[in-house]
Length: 412
Image 1 (cartoon, rainbow, N blue to C red):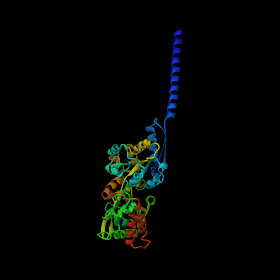
Image 2: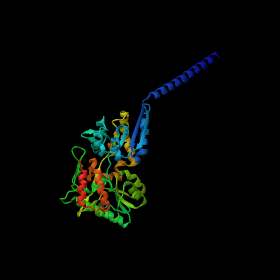
Image 3: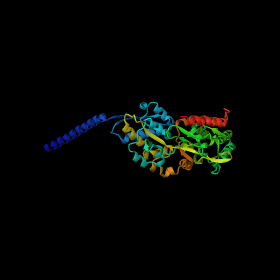
Image 4: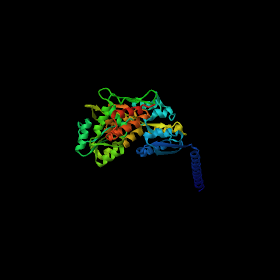
């Protein structure tokens, strides 16, 4: 009997010790958790990326759980206006943000971005074109995110053969015969570049990295500036041409009024949801200019992730930027948004290589130029493009319009 009592008392002692130890461990964990640094980070991205980036925030917090108390929030910020917003108030801006690569030089020059610390590692993991887009004077200032910021032709295979899509004349003819439209945004200077890019007339940044040079008003040669302007007017007067912004283009795809148009990989998923197996994608067509067929050009570029040099938690912001741009998350971005990875391993996957949109982008890359223009390029070209789309509503002489556009583009 005494032996049984001793055993019971022994077991009770073990149980009490165990419970006491657990409570002590829980208390230590509570103290440890309260002692962790609180890391507040603001992430800016496009509206279309909200769900994707919030998912990445969750996995980032899981990956680094126990190392800090994270308070990471997403806020919508258009990538094309990101630079202007950031330079308007560096210390109030996001810690981490997505932006188009043409804004890199201005952000770096203003001190908004620091050189990437582990640049050699980032360079090795990414495609050379993406690394170039994230670099200023041989210094890497941002993390490559995509290598697909360009545009090409989408078309509905129900109406067009591969031969039909080679010329814009034929595309417009078929669209007209089907009471439908070919869509392109001439209110965006980004797309207007298509008509000048392969004419031997030039536009680009000067050595100062701020001002532009431009010869789009050239009056000599086989193709002059007025020839391009007249070609655009000839296209604009076609009943099947429609000058539409991106959202309007997609709406036309959905309601069946648009059967071909110029856009990029960011719309691949939405278009495929409507056209299904009839979704076609290819390089841009040629257009008629002064009795010549000119291959339409395109700007190319990449989306980048920047880290605010004024971030209160700069090291953690860099970790978040690396997380968003790692191989796993670039694959996820492709799966959900069909955006072309800059990461070498992600880009070499079978799924990416078989994407019609990515294939079209690669086909168009032969006729593309890395987007490198200063801020004064955009507004003058937009004004010109919109007037051409309206059929020259101002009635002004074409050469005078070209001269004014070039003067404003190259203004110092």
